[in-house]
Each structure stands twice: as structure tokens, then as C-alpha cells.
Figure 1 (cartoon, one colour):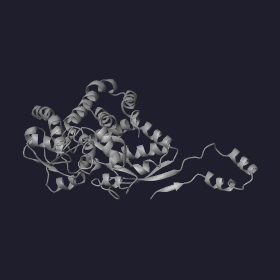
Figure 2 (cartoon, helix red, strand yellow):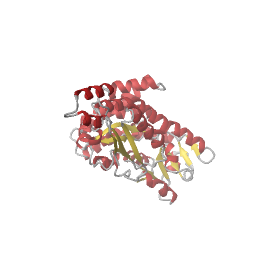
Figure 3 (cartoon, one colour):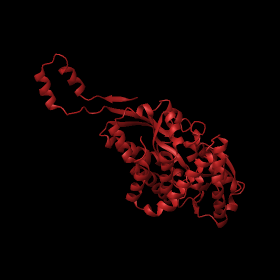
Figure 4 (spheres, one colour):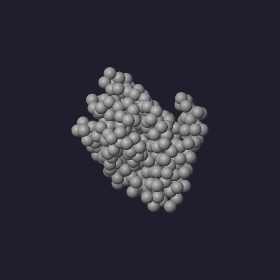
Length: 386
């Protein structure tokens, strides 16, 4: 799958080595650059996320193109999307085992392999602002959690950014505008925080792979789901969802949209690796904006005549506040269940970082791309030795 383009200087070296006349060597050397250009390589990128999804079209693929641009084509990619090579469920294994050179994986599915890192993916209920959440999870992983970095290194994987999305909304196949409308309904959820929130609403949570949500709604196995608006289009729910309660209900965090197999990463020159990492603060902003915020607005506009959108009622907002208050305890209980002796302290540090980004840093960068990139560079991407 990988293709290499070798620099012509290798052939030239063969001509002028050994007994080749010194004069010829000097003449040719004058025409060649002082150092040989690095090998160009095309890496396979695999993901179980549908090719049409905004996460791919407006998120991952532009980043891969930017990587190729800043490395002058020395690092290029063959994207194989939609589960053709690795599925959402086995994305982590596929990257670790070298089935793909780079790919996407979901933190919540790696609890046994990455007990520390996957805690980040359990922090959905703490997310408020998409940009602050994206900043927080990248700082937690790349700077604030040594155990996270150690276990990923042991697995032979090199993430280059963490991903969050836009706020979750409750989407149903029948009318729903308030907490009372949701009681007793079955709801397809991807993660355990969403399941806890559903239970707080009196709903029956049904853990589902995201690709199984559409048939579950169509067949009546579920009445609702909890996703971001952009995912209505990404996962083909346009003709199934009839009502949406837009009240923000957490932000899914902790997926890794681009992670390299370590052996593949180490085939990239140090200079090109540095250029890739330098892209990340801008890539984080673009990912949130283009793949989610902009797409949310477009999806809502496109469905305005087909779907009822409502803000949620006071009862729902009150329950959400109570739910958030209990999430730190739920995270600590999960850490204990995983046998993490320092779990309480780890969770406290993670939560503190979330609060710093939402309470102290958000007012400094809200709506200001340059300020966000500067803060993320200073706090995260200038500190981690990729």
C-alpha cells in the first residue's frame, strides 16, 4: 500500500563512488544540493467513519492535505474510509498492529488498552464550549497526564491531536420538546456519560455503535438518540429524526482523529514531524469550526421545514445541572473500577484543566482564532516531544 519516491541523488552517488574520477565527482557535486532530499512516502490512513461525514470531509482530509503541503509532498496519504480497511470498533488495533500507517480511533472503546487516556473520552458531561473542550482535552493528554502518554507509547501509537465535537442534542423520531416528553423513551447512546444523562431524564439508554443508530431508529428499537446536529447528515438521519431538543447536553471528547503507528511516524524526518506538529493549533480550530460548528448550522437550516427544533424546558435544564454536579464522582468511580490507584488525583487534574479552559481561558480567545492558536501553542504543542 505504501509507495516510495526515491531522490535521484542515490543513483548519482553510485556513479561517482569507488573508482570514479575525482573530477567527475566534483563537477556533479556542484550541480547537486548540499543535502539529499528526504524520501517521499505515501501512508495509508484508515477510518471506520463514513467518507461523506463532515468529520472526514471538513476535518481529517484537509489536515492530511495540509500535512502533505507543509512537507512538500514528502508525507502523503491514501485515505481508506468508511470501514473498508478498519472499522470504528477496531481502529485502535488497526493502527497499533500496522494494518494502517495512521488512522482514527475512539477513546471510549479503549478502556482496557488505555485505562488512563480513555478517561478523557468519559468527560462528555463536562464539555460546554467546543473550542474550550478541544483545548482542554489536548492539554490533558499531551501535557497533563503522563500515564496517558506512557500507555499510548507502550502501544506503539503516536496521536497528533485529540478531538471533540459540537454540543449534543436530543433527537427523536416523534415530537419532543421537554423533559416530560422524554420519560420512558429508549435512546441510542454512544458512551456511558450519555447513558447516565439519559437515565437522569427517565429514559432507557441503549448503548449503540454510531453506525447502528440509524437502523435502530428506523426499526423502532430506539425512539431517540443523542448526537451533534452535523451527525444527522453524516450518518443519514435526515428522514428519520422529526424533533430536536437543542439544549447543549455535553460534548463528546477524547476521540483521536489522526494517530500514527509509531514505526510509520519514525519514518518521517524530524524536520517534517516538527512541521506537522506546528500545524496542529490551526488544525484544532479548523476541525471544530469546519467539521462541526458550520455543519451544525447548515444541517439545521436544511431541515427547518422537516424537523421541529426546540430549546428544552426549565425542568430539563435543572436536571442537566444536577447531572453535571455528579459527573466528577462518576469519573472517579470509573477510575477505581479500572484499578487506577491514583484515579481520584488523575480525575481531579483533568477536571481542573477543563475548568481552566472554560472559565479562565475562554474569555481570552472566544471568537479570536489567533488568540486561541497562540494559547494552544504555548500550553500544549510547544511542550510535547512528539
